[in-house]
Length: 172
Length: 251
Image (cartoon, rainbow over all chains, first blue to last red; front, side, top):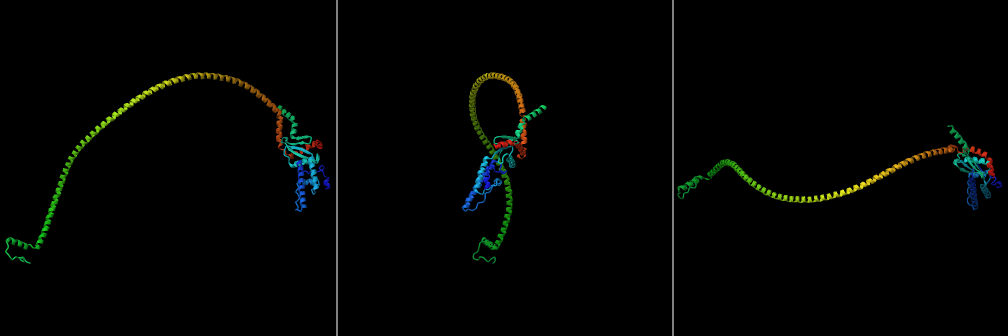
């Protein structure tokens, strides 16, 4: 309890399979569901009903609890975790990344790993799709845009390409 | 029994009586029978002979009679037939004459009726012919007048049509000349415009050639890279922009 109480949304460690803000929202919803189930089970136990089975947790929640060394044994713990997770959901820095192709989960996890190691430990990604980018990524931070796509790279070299074509045409 | 058994002793008899008695006494029953048999056979013999002769005579007589009768009958028949023929001829001739007379009479009557009918029909035909001739003459006269009128009208119309055709032909010629002129003008304009469009298109193509090639390159390269292949490049570029990103995220 003491260790869990020391954990706040500012020092939560997000597992690698929690990639997007939706994943964080899913964590919040799952903890709330588990809290409801366990509370209901405790009430039933007090009334002498048969023992209810322990709720099944997702891999994301399991890893989150393990990496942060948290437990859901008491209602106060669960309430504190829910509260902190809600804060995390609202305050976690979001990095909008738009790709030219559909992003697979492994690539997203690698990018998330790099972002959390380099940019912010609790950063999450919002994924978008724009085939016109051809390749690369269109990155949007809270206040800036970083166009790291191939379209941007070619546009920068447009004049060079025209010069080359003109030279080729003139040569003929 | 003897010859004198029945001798009458009572009174003397005359010689005739005595002869009769003698005959009677002499011709007894046996003798009678013998005589009777003899007579019968003789009679039969005579009858046979006489019958044969009679039969012979009868046959010859019958044959003669037949011949005579045949000749007589033939003669009578010839006479009768001749008479009948004569009478028949006379009767038939008379009947034929009567019938011919009757037929002639009826034929004369029929000829008279037919002649009368033909006369009537002829008169009727003559009357109808006269009517038809009159009607035909009238119709011909009407048709002549009508055709004359139509001909005159058509003549006027043809003249008008000819005039209209001349006008139309003149108009067509004028239009053809105008079209030829317009065609030449349009041809010149079109050539000028085509040359201009060509120049514009060439210029636009030259101006956009870079974009076109760029678009082609983008399309050709875009499908060949998935995110895994792009990941090192993306991380490298993000690494290059790391400071800017971090600064923005801290704000």
